[in-house]
Image (cartoon, rainbow, N blue to C red; front, side, top):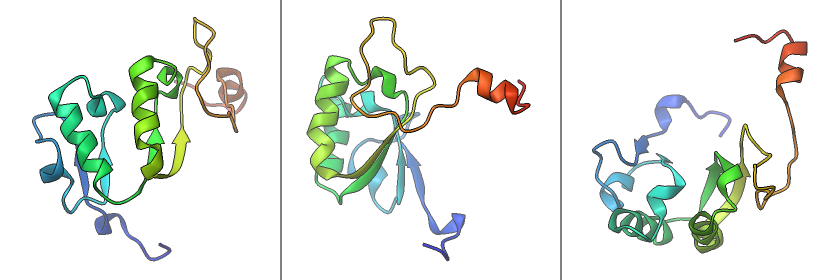
Length: 122
């Protein structure tokens, strides 16, 4: 990996007019999608889920992880966990209004006060 260059990777996205399932995954080294694109409650989600479950093991970068307590989100994560080599969860809102926490451990926190103290302004 030390010699890898950006042009060595092929990125495909799910949605946005792109086809789902294997046609959009073939040849891609990076697949960008949202968890709802793998839900079993719709045909496209089932197709996408089947594609990743029948493909190679993968690393999951799970953004918006504060939503993981939701029923279908949790069910999908449980289905794919046997294919996941490493799961990294990220969220900008770890504290949910209902008090439920993501099903992962927080290893680093950087809040607005930290950003302001570091001189980062929007």
